[in-house]
Image (cartoon, rainbow, N blue to C red):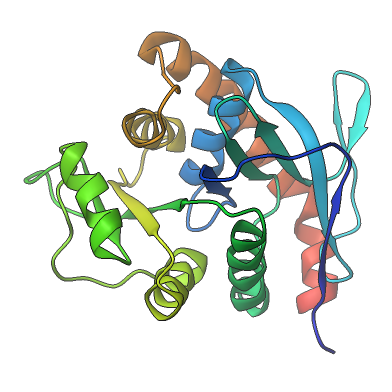
Length: 237
């Protein structure tokens, strides 16, 4: 069965020349925690939802209000959009999610797509690195004093975004944070959020507040993962 992802915009979106931030969780929840932290501590509003017949059929209840599990938050003043997700997409959807994201960013004339991933690494070296699809995007990493990964493998949606960015000459940056295994994802999420604030003008993070918010967000994301596990098993086997 062919996958189909639909985007329904419910408010005016004007992010021309701005930024799209990928908030889908992958290996671990750090990426989703970072973007949820960003939207919860700054002035973002719900501007759309993302849905698919191949997403588990659930509603996320927050503060007494039903929510789609994958939403678009926008700050038109900062020209920033965030694809925020409580769902970890199945591997069979990774290519379409990435291409949908890239197409939407181009449709809204974004200047940069930002994603992130957790990598396993030793104690030596920088806590966070980055990789970019174009020379312009690499310069943004250098200007933010974020070291560039020279050799490695980026799996899943972040990797596809990079490959598509190279072909279409779209600016894509993937931030790479060291994962602590075992360890809480919220600390890695906070590292990503701090790095995002260096790359996206107008955004900022207070680390102590961020760590507290990120820990709460991680708990909510893990609860959703546990509750949707039976649905995913019945859908994907």
